[in-house]
Amino acid sequence: MPTGLNLNYLIYLLQGAGWTVILSALAFVLGGAAGFIVMLGRISRMRWLRFVTLLYVQAIQGIPLLIIIFIIYYGLGILGVSLPPLLAAGIALMVYCSAFLGEIWRGSVEAVPRTQTEAAECLALTRWQSLRDVILPQAIRIATPSTVGFLVQVLKSTSLVSVIGFIELTRAAQVINNTIFQPFAVFGIAGAIYFALCYPISRWSRALERNLNVGRR
Amino acid sequence: MKYQLTFGGLWAYWPDFLAGAWTTIEFTFVATVLGLIIGILGAVARGSSIAWFRILAGAYVELVRNTPFLIQIFFLYFGLASLGVRLPINVAAILAMVVNVGAYSTEIIRAGIEAVHPSQVEAAESLGLSRFQIFRDIILSPALERVYPSLTSQFTLMMLMSSVTSQVSAEELTGAANNIQSITFRSMETYIIVGALYLLLTLLLKTGFWGLGKLIFPRRRRLGTPL
Image (cartoon, rainbow over all chains, first blue to last red):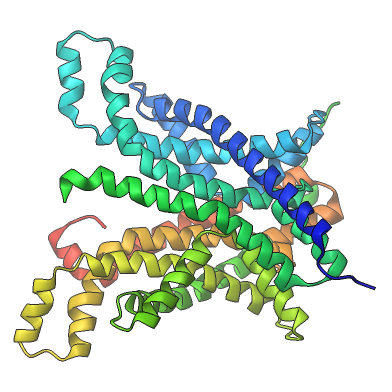
């Protein structure tokens, strides 16, 4: 006999939400590091490196995250590497985030006026110095709103790792629904938790965008 | 452990792969058309002078954009089932896709409409155009032209997102892959093939949208401005 939704189930959902947050943070940090490298590749002076990173970005952005998760999950399996699900999920999300963040940041770096690079060259800064001290500090301002906005995307994407059995919020909701079969209540609460996590970040991203555009209005 | 990728055994399943890909195309087509209609209606509602419409459309957009698609589809599919409404699985999948992409389209089209300068509308009014004419020719058409790139990339994202509908056992490309790998145990190979097929679909869709844009926005074509 199925019982109603009680406090234990809510605690289970909140634990799942905790894992969702941990996984998002992991994906964002790892994906950010990899995305920085992708960005460097995309603005490199070496033609082949630009081409290779372009192919990487196009491939990752042209394949559903679900398929990427499956490929990495089964791929690690047949390589004989037995990773905890958290790490397998983290790697899949890292790959996904790196392509998108790399592209966002490339756009921001290229949005810094060209004269800044030229001025840096005139001062005999090396390419790395000019990137670190001149371009990036300005690019970060431009990149912040979309990067924060992408964080919402990351949080939502973590729901997909439920397919490989990692118990985050969506998986926890599925497990509970299989027990008590009250889909409106269970998925409604799970959705509300996602909303509570994502909505403030969306608002923050929009506020950042307004502040950034203040000079151009 | 030594593992060799062998694609040979999967040849026999080509019809299944193709059928899955075709279903994905069908889902995408229907969801694009319906999503566009909802997007236009939603954008009009968000700019409406009736407060209720604005609030409802705003709530719809925020709710959909801040929750995962997977939760939305579970909510719809299992929720409707618990009410005794048993939708065919493909209808449920497309319904969820339309609800999702409709919210994003609303937001994109709203931005396009807001970018139309008020003086354009005033000029049209002074020329004696009817309200419907103004909306169609002066507001909507330039707005769609302006946001066409973001709109189409949203629809491309939706095509990729349709893979998630396999989780309620829709038989599109990912669903087909799940079946094939459970029969052949060639999971890695199956998902690599499917990944490549999705990549191909993305490419086709992008090219298709680009060509369509050239076709329906002749002004752009004449001026030679890129889409």
